[in-house]
Every structure is written in C-alpha cells, then in structure tokens.
Image (tube, rainbow, N blue to C red):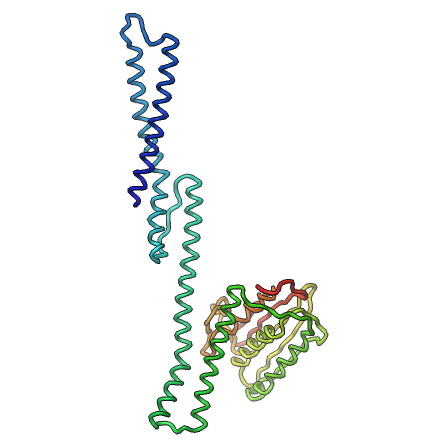
Length: 345
C-alpha cells in the first residue's frame, strides 16, 4: 500500500513537472523565434542545439532535486500510513518521528498524541476489567463455598451461615452500585438533584449515623461546623461523599483515636474536611488514592470509595485533596461552590 502511494504521488508530480518544463521551453522557443534569435550567422542552428542541451541538463537536475524533495515530503506520510495500519489492528505502540514539512510535522504530532491517549484508554480498560474480576471473585468465592457446604451437608443450614451468604451478596450489590455511579460520573451522565439546604444539618445527620460504629470501634467523632451554612447541593450525593470519607477514616483509625469533621465558609466556597489521627498514608500513595480500585493499605473495601467521592465533588464543580503523614493521620478536604450553576457534569 505504501509503495503504491509513492508511485501514484511520484507519477502525478512527474507529469506536472514535465508539463510545466515543456510549457516553459515552448514559451521560450516561441519568444526567441519571434525575435529571430534562432538562426545564427551561417544558419547552422548552434544556438538551438545549445538551448536544447541546456534544457535537458536543467530537466535532469530539476527532476533529481524534485525527487529528493518529494521523497522528503512523502516519507513521513508513508511512516504515518504504516503506523495507522498497526493501530487499526489494536497495536498502540508505534510512534512516528516528527520530520518533513511543517504541516506534516503538525499532523504527525497530533497523531502521536492521539495514539498516546488511545493507548492510555486501552490500558485503563484492561486494568479495570482485571480489577473488577478480582473484586467480584472474592464475594462470589465465599458465596459459592458456603452454598456448596450447605448442599453437601458440611455446614448446617443455620442463621450464621445464611447471614454470611447474605452479607456477601450485600458486598456484591454495593460494588455494582459503586461501579454504576462511577461509570455515570465519568461519562458525564450523573444527574444531580440540587437543592439549597443547611450543610451543617447534613453533616450532623451523617455523623449521627456513624456514631454506633464509632462507639464500637472506640473512636471519638467530633463535629465542628455551623448549622446555618447554606449550600446548593445534591444532599444524597454529598452525603455519599461524607460517608465514604468517614468510613475510610474509621477503617484506619485505631481505638482511642478521633475523627474531626469541619466546615468553613470562604468567599465563594464552603470547605469541608475529614481529619483522623490514624495510621496515615505513605507519600508514594498520595497521588493514587483517588484512583479506581487503588488500595494503599490492606482492606476489604472495593477501592472505589475515594474515586467516587472525587467524581461527586467534581460534579458539584468542586475540588478535593488529601494530606497525610504516616503514623500521624490523614485529612481529606473538599470545596463546594456556594451557588452551583450546572445540573450535570
């Protein structure tokens, strides 16, 4: 395919070039004929022969120079065609060297950037499939093992084993719900049901729902916020953010520790923070804590909580960040505009 491309381009260029040279030669011949310059003294036509030889030499030189210029211009296009054929069959590794005319270099630069994005997307897709398979395998294995034990009579059909199976089905349901929420948020299809409400009320209700779990874990929950702080939010989604952050903090805060939930109003935003004095996060993990399925520490969780929190905050045109020191604790902050303008991301 590449060879045929070069032949077609070369043939068209040669035809155009020969036509141009022939037209110029005829025009010059016509002019000098009209001026009576062809016949020299003696009538031997020396001038015409000299003109013909010079024209042939010029033609050969021009063809050689044009061929080199044509090859320089079309060689990068041929490389681009080869790379395109490889990409078409799923190989995203080729990159084309930036050379040739400025316009061709710009085209190659855009092509390389596009392939890099496709490669990153393909890698992300493969990783997601592998991670989903891993996350689904654990609860399914537990369910299968318990059901086989019940069928074979190894386990008694008592409440304990049935509740274990029920809990694993809940884990599966939560994982599927989380994946759906994340998928909707990432493709911009997550609809927000916004309303203006007192953010402090939502914070207080969320803290109260975690109080029994915190008491059982021996962790103190502290709220420091104003009940009169107004914000336009989707209460269910922001509560989901808070639940993910508080649950994550409880998971890694030892007995006797504390978790502080605060809110502060700024000029255009309200800043909410969840701080714990737990085990902390290693510096090399901080850049990845909001990645899907990423777990910096041994956990039974799905690894989707912080990724979902980030997407939900961004859906409100907000920002989220994390600070942590190993052995000292972690603070996760997110900002929300006091008056959001859009209903979907």
